[in-house]
Image 1: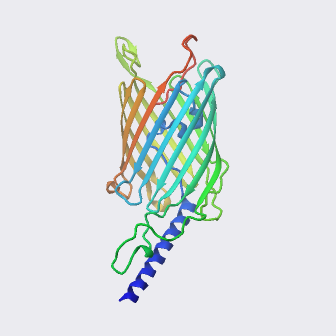
Image 2: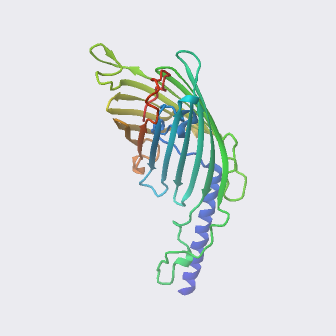
Image 3: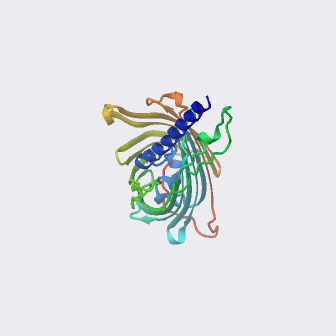
Length: 351
């Protein structure tokens, strides 16, 4: 009986080691960047050209929990800060993003610094180029695995394994992102290219370049009548508008389209999007992922939003979908003695 247990324990230990190794290979070869459904509430993550885009000082937080009902779930958090220097027509920003993926605890953290310049091309058109330099660290955590030395003949489980699996299972590298936004009073269009240096992301000692990520995004704000001859805002200056938006992303052979609209009726904002590409793609399977619902509130200097991704892919709603929260606080550090600014602000939504 004891010999049978030792053999079974050894087989289980080998299987778990193999599972962990295969997860690393999969991570190296297919890892994609995390995403936010409220991509305009994560402006510095979307495009470095948005650094300082409010012409104020801004602090923001984003949190996303994807497929919470599955063990192979994803959790992503990001915090950012940006500020606009009007004397130099320049915006600066900083962003920290952490991501934990899957059962094996694959995790990453990045710290980025951004700069954007605001260039007024004509009386109605403004262009903002931006750049980000970032430091990344990626590693794997085996705390969710069970190894043979945690078991005995009575089936008891020790809390810590004696296996030494941390050596060499991490990778640090620097990366570069470029972007730009062109906008008018109600129309905006942006493009960003992430991982332009295609750094080696492998945590197993192999060579696995992190592929470039392309994002094209934009929208058009349609001002709504609000009574008494007013268009776009009421008598208290609260916005009334509908803004159709889109974002198309591509990274290696993976692509995705987010398309939908915001209705802004301050202090309330609601939104509805479709995520996916509704035509057959890989092996003739349609690439439809989710329908996204948003509710947000604009409370003076705070913007608070919640969105839910209703999964329509093969995983189904049994996966738990995805929950996302955004909080943004903006304030002014501008000298009140200076005259009001007349340069247009980007009309993109706040969520």
